[in-house]
Amino acid sequence: MSERQRATIEHLMRPLVIGHRGAPGYLPEHSLASYRLALRQGADALETDVVMSKDGVLVLRHENELSRTTDIATRPEFADRRTTRIVGRKKLTGWFTEDFTYEELYGLGAPTVADRIITLDTLLLLVAEESGRRGHRIGLHVEVKHPSYFAGHGLPMTRPLLETLRDHGVDHRGSRVWIQSFEEDFVRRISPLTELPLVQLLDPSWGRVDCHAIAAYADAIGPKKSMVRKKGQPATGLVGDAHRAGLKVFVWTLRAGRDQATRLYEAGVDGVFADYPDRCVAALRELAVDRGMEETA
View 1 (cartoon, one colour):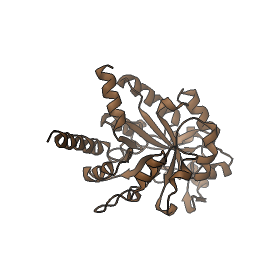
View 2 (cartoon, one colour):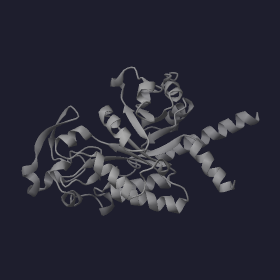
View 3 (cartoon, helix red, strand yellow):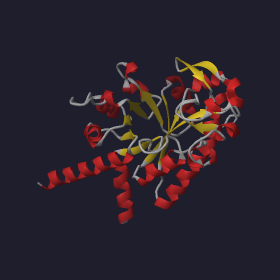
View 4 (cartoon, one colour):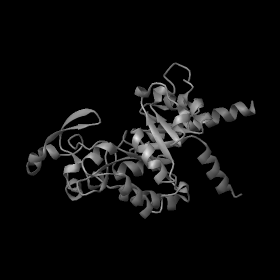
């Protein structure tokens, strides 16, 4: 085994640092600039959220309502598309991606062209480019947002998602692509349709988590960090339960410094979604140094 191969294996065995929507602690989320920065800071993988446009394009946004991060509210030509919708049990008023073509979405104002709304295709091309440059595959975690909502609006997401991944040659387990969602029904439905590993995202409303039941249709859980370990408290035991069921654990979302990351690494998580990837990378390095010192003591 070459030194490069050994380094790559050791790299993949440690907990992953996953750039949450890129590196949004520094640059606009879901922008090409943000994703590139996350990789420069040492992220092992990227996390993205997908919603759909009116013409069925998978676009990268945390939510389908547009007014938070675009200039849509100042555009008189779109004033008549302002409406109210129930999305994920929340009543929202504004402008929604499913009412606009991708060409219209791309034309919405952003500080630079690099910050404009992009597609999943664009991100997959970036991942392929950077993977080739690094000599190993960069991971990608794709969160499908509100799939039942979009299906109810005539925009089912399963087939377009799987076809897009297939077109880019990353529809197999070795591609380091993960599909994830908070909607249990969606994760269950897509499970027999793909060999890609699946993540059941969790929030505290789940109550007691039955890891063995989740393992019947998914490969990992993605709990909120407080479900694994709260500040000043011991680990909850969820990571151990998941590992015994054969599940990996990817925790969301780290928005603080190195100490928070270290507490979760010590709890045994397999990866963290980070707004500041560089801080989590630094915490991993410090932890490796400390453990090395312990082993030589």
